[in-house]
Length: 119
Image 1 (cartoon, helix red, strand yellow):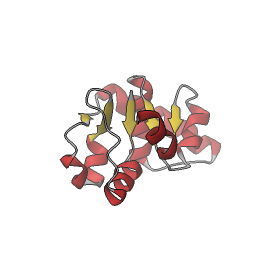
Image 2 (image 1 turned 90 degrees about the vertical axis):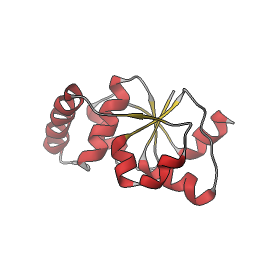
Image 3 (image 1 turned 120 degrees about the vertical axis):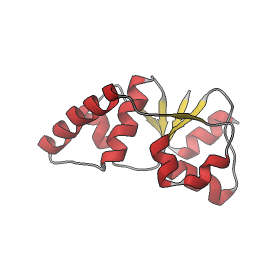
């Protein structure tokens, strides 16, 4: 199952590629706030953060800052949700690798690999 980051939603919208399968493709409300046009993709289920996601994201933010590699808050939260829900994060943003260093359970693939796997 897949969690699509905002960058992938934007890329799919621009290229008119729809590699989404109902029931296994997710995004977060955070990505929809960043890119509301993606709401048109009815196959994508939306995840809303819970208190536990914010708490863990805060811990991850502290670890990232201690390492000297802070990343955007929304991305910390998206990555944290992916780990909690045991989803593979689909993103072309390289800074998720920084999050993966403090949260090794985070699984990431880029959009090119995702599109090949889903077709």
